[in-house]
Amino acid sequence: MTGETMQAWRVVRHGAPSEALELQEVPVPEPGTNEVRVRTAATVLNFNEVDGCRGRYLTVNPPLPYTLGMEVVGVVDAAGPGAEQWIGHRVMATATGAFGAHAEAVICGAEMVFDVPPGLDDRDAAAFFFPFHLAYLGLHTRGNVRPGEWVVVHAAAGGIGSAAVQLAAAAGAHVIATAGGPEKLALCRELGAEVAIDYRAGDFAPEVLEATGGRGVDVVFDTVGGEVGARSLPCLAWGGRHLVVGFSSGIEEEDEAGITPRPLCFGSISLVGVMLSYQPDGEPRPFPGINRTDRSVGDAVQRELEQLLAAGVIRPVVGREVTHLELPAALDAMEQRLTTGRTVVMW
Ligand SMILES: NC(=O)c1ccc[n+]([C@@H]2O[C@H](COP(=O)([O-])OP(=O)(O)OC[C@H]3O[C@@H](n4cnc5c(N)ncnc54)[C@H](OP(=O)(O)O)[C@@H]3O)[C@@H](O)[C@H]2O)c1
Image 1 (tube, helix red, strand yellow):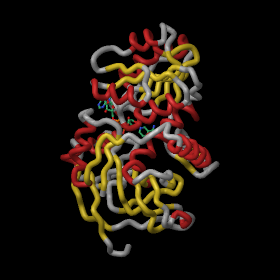
Image 2: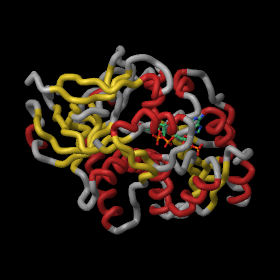
Image 3: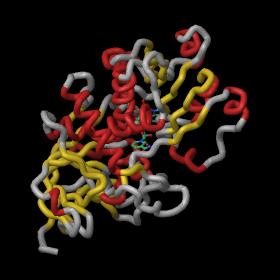
Image 4: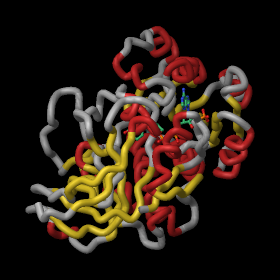
């Protein structure tokens, strides 16, 4: 430790973000083996950070107090053994353990560090990383989407959803978006959705079936889960793929018994899990049940995405930019479903 300190948003108790978080002065951390330290220009809100504040996110559940935050954009100013090649790079990265990012300096594992794509400023870079990598892994690497197929994207005006709409449209698919309210539906159409359904106003399933002439869709990109996920299964056509990406309607569902085998068997459909987490190629998995994606796949995804960006086919969607002092209130707004695209936090 150098004795240098920094500001960090720490979860000090569980509750709504504005109750759970305190801005504290903490030591600037040092990178370990295969880690870098990023000096923060921007961070970005993730829905799971709401779950973290509430104390119900079992996947990332460090003891209190801890620094919240998953993603950071900035310049690498220090690196541990094996990660020295990143020093001086302007990067977008995931904090080690997926917490610790809402701070002035952030430690990140090198396998989750990427150069900022050419032409993106800090704000757009912060909005870019998770949504486009995750949506690409879901739709292409895992979901094998094909031109002419029909794709439903749930919570399509959100951070991840707004990228999934664009990438599905870019793949030549017909996109049906679901979201809550007219403003969100308008954004979905602007991003390339042919059909936009307000799933908070009524059941979306009949509208999905009507849009496809009763046939059903080929892919459902589902970050919502719960009732929305269950209602999606009968919407899938023969050979359809339901991408299990997130659980914004209730993270507890991750560990609850839910879907019965009947719709899978009689629908001839597949459930397909998708996680954004890269590892050094060929590294043994940490324990059974966790399978990360090789970094070489991530590098290929990044190259594809950079081409689509350069061609103007996709764009990061920043719904709102806030200062770091406004972070807890902005996270409250995310919990209340008031955000569109990504909320970027400038430091
Ligand atoms: N698999 C992975 O590796 C991975 C990585 C990152 C993120 N994710 C997942 O992706 C999802 C989206 O993350 P995000 O940060 O981009 O958030 P987001 O989609 O921008 O925000 C969440 C949205 O979900 C919708 N929603 C549906 N039911 C809700 C409910 N009961 N309460 C609150 N919101 C509800 C709301 O949109 P409407 O108002 O339109 O309904 C809300 O705006 C999260 O579930 C997250 O866990 C997964």
